[in-house]
Amino acid sequence: MITGPAIARVAAREAERFHAANPRAFVHHAAAKGWFQSVPFHWMRDWPSPVPIVAASAKDATLTSVDGQTYDDFCLGDTASLFGHSPPALAAALAKQASEGLSYMLPTTRGAALSERLAAMFDLPQWQVTTTASEANRAVIRWCRGISRRRKILTFNGAYHGAVDDAFVDLKAGAPLMRASLVGQVHDLRGTTIVVEFNDAEALTTALRGGEIACVLAEPVMTNVGMVRDAPGFLRTLRMLCDETGTLLVFDETHTISSGYGGHGVTHGPAPDLIVVGKSIGGGVPCAVYGFSAPVAERMAALNRSRSPGHSGIGTTLSANALAITAMDTMLGEVITPAAYDHMLRGAARLVAGLEQEIASGGLDWHVTQVGARVEFLTCPTPPRNGGEAKAAMHPGLEAAVHLFLANRGILLAPFHNMMLVSPVTGDDQIDRLVGAFAECIKALKE
Image 1: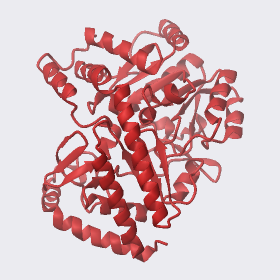
Image 2: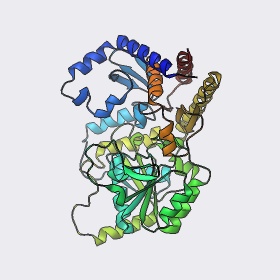
Image 3: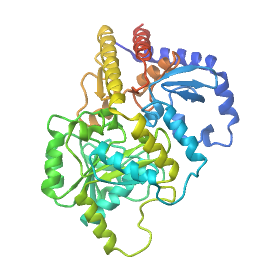
Image 4: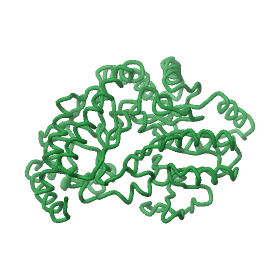
């Protein structure tokens, strides 16, 4: 059994070790007075180390800090670099594009090729490009409301979907409430956003059969509240209910692109009406896409013909800039391949087997969840069935101690929960080092 005092002892010892090994990081943060809280974006402070590691460079699945520390990187920019840092083909293509112009506000011939690659990979014929997945989700919600003439959307408790106001409603004791962590929220979204628990087919049925929902915005597997797998048959029920009620089904596959080539919908089904994919398809260059079926495209075109001219509320000046188009076309053409997924999935299976063996050897009631190349250990005895259970099962102090312990031994996990990503360039030696450090951590926590 792991006790509170043991967690505190390990956390304190590892904080001292981090401080001794990373003097330049502390100097950097003390000097970076122009940044709010010393970082260019505030959530960079959310790492469990005393101060965030300061990156110097990254290549393949390895990151190096300004203190000369080298990390086996299983965070990979929290999915942005899922296919490795700076793939050679991408670096060369970006350098060439940089000399030819970065943003034209005009289409390019390379963009036409990209649209064909997207259609072939994700099995949807029509596409649009945005700068972030948050922007793509916001656009998709607008389109779904516009073409359905329905005001409400449905999301699942604990979902994220980026910085989209409409998704910031949670459930507590079965009642909807505005997300407590939001800064400056003034509009009550509960009149237009319906929230139910993931895998609750009964609540989903009741909500959709009311006939007021424009779209369901969902990850096919929840990945932002830990990882919550779909119960057998739940996604088929979701697809059936959307068809029955005329509700559009949107899969946000920004994370579940890890499931396999083409994402979760293509790999496992069912097919959505619209899909959002961000981060990794640009190799870290800010960009995202949303795709949709031919019937949805026809309804969107009809809506465009009927509305007044002028700004639609969808898109920005930087949407579909030339650099983003080049990045995505290169990634889909040369980096994100079926062979890459074969390596990723084999490596993830190796990681799962190793973690499960060490958990069993340590006599812990933890478990491991896998979504393709995405792996997570949860410090609870049974896999959560929904976002509410997942949040209740979290142990922030314990998880922070584990993260810091691993970082001090050259293993970098995603900071927000216990997620590990396996890339096409992640080596078996890196996976084995992670498993070995994880075993060492369990031993330290049980002393």
